[in-house]
Image (tube, rainbow, N blue to C red; front, side):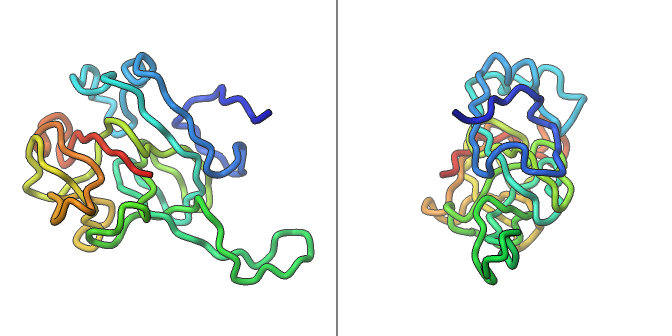
Length: 187
């Protein structure tokens, strides 16, 4: 039987409290009560609370700044503490700020709803409604993809449907300046 999650989703840890890759589905009533860590001024966002959000437990290889899209960083392990040679072995569920345009969907981890320090552990959103930093031009209903190569952690209007990670629910900066309210769905 696994560990039961009882603490807040915005808690940042210095050690792996939950197994990396653990997913937690936040019910819609909790989403409505918790709203977002991106802006404390958002008290009645009409979109939040409209369905559950799925979070994944990760280790941040770089600072995971709130509102920024994260990508998987397959860090390499050099010592697993057992004396076994594991040099160059890839580790899953390590992430960093997305810094590539139109990255393949399976390479994207999710959106940080709160800041997680580099080397620390925490929860990021992989499915559901959230706020994300966005490039100019985001409008209600447009399909979105990664724009990290232009501005790290941002999303943009999707260049192709194959790279789409979700869609905008309103125009850029409508609820929170420089952010888009979006629905994302990542594997």
